[in-house]
Image: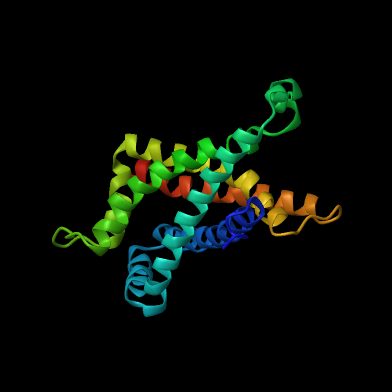
Length: 213
């Protein structure tokens, strides 16, 4: 247990859970993009995910991944502030690092607030709530975007997620030990493309159904 409570151990946990969540986002976006294809196809995919035992078991793994990632990030941030020298301001962090890297804790906490809202409006209703008569999962997912304020919050949250992923993607590989003069720049470029695709993909769905009708 001593290793996992050390800074290195916590960074490795952050790295592994981050890579796991990065993979989850790809799957999540892929399923959500089915709403742009047809309601029937999305409802079939949603039903499969709600009834498949393996996917149902993975929900608990996913929840644990979120909890570990968030908790370890907060602990590391607190420790970094405590260990930071007082003359840190003289090092001009704004010129030595990107905004996304300096704002990981801020974007992470804002994303957490959105996640709570997202779970309340979608996951909780689908799994524990009562759907109105005749309403499908497709109707629930797309219907909330008729509210322009909700759409704005949704899009803003995924823009923040894009910034969070922009630094988090390459940081996850670096913490896992993948830090090479040749490959690190490529990983950074892949991470930038990935973060843009995630932010644009989820935002596109929200904007489409917000303005389609």
